[in-house]
Image (cartoon, rainbow, N blue to C red):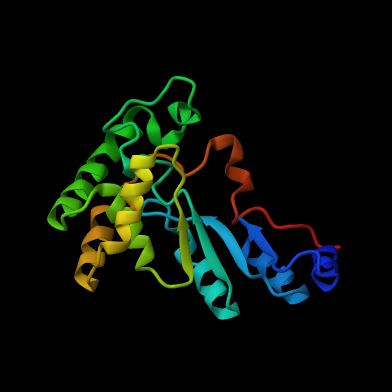
Length: 199
């Protein structure tokens, strides 16, 4: 952070952001130089950061860039409405295999039903839900297809009430999501366990 602060002072960079920092790391980094944004996984089925990172970011005035806002493509229909390519890493991801996938298909069905009630698509509903979590949260869905880009942009027109938001959360109970958010080999590096060392 000290070196990044020097780059800001030299005019070589304008802002500093972090990806997947722990609460402790974020506090310590922000004390050295204000952090503009953090990039965290946040979606209907990955809501852990609501407990610690989001409150801290709001306390410190830090924006949140939400990656994998469609649950690594799950709420766009990956592995439900279409099969995964054999070479895709998702084909071995804990949430996309075996019994976990079968459990998660039930969640997708509930989200799809909610979307139908609101006259939108499941990915539009998932993105609209995120967009309603606060002006400080910016989802960054990725796609290689123009039709998906157009569909994602359509989420901006989906207006949700407090009742809608509750129904959507109820459709995706976190304790019913099958499988871990991350590959088991990477789980020890998740933000809650990955503090940067002190000097």
